[in-house]
Length: 121
Image (tube, rainbow, N blue to C red; front, side, top):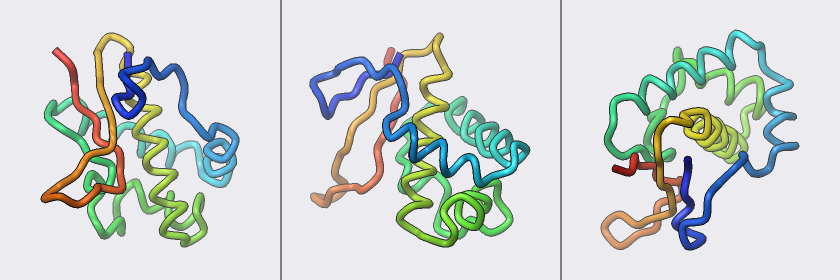
C-alpha cells in the first residue's frame, strides 16, 4: 500500500499520468524496462528513505536509467526525470506486501523536486 501524504494520506492505487508513462515505455526495449525496475526494486529493498531526485545520481551513463534519457525521453532532462519518478512509483505500488508513504518535502529549507518514499512500520 502507498499513502500520499501530500494529499492527507490518501491511498494511491495507480501510477498517475498513465498515458504519458505508457508512451515513454513504448519507446523502450522490454529488457531495458525490466533492468530499470530490477534496479529500483533493489534500492527499495535496502530500506531507508528514497528520494527520486537523488536515487539515480546525476550521470545515468552506463546505468539502466540511460534508456530513459535516450529512448523514452529523447534527451529531454525534464521528461526523463518525470519518467524515472513514475517508474519508482510503479515499483513501490508493486510491493503490495509492504506499506509505504510518500510526499514532497524540503532539505535545508528548500523544496525537493522529486518525491520521497519511505517504508511505514
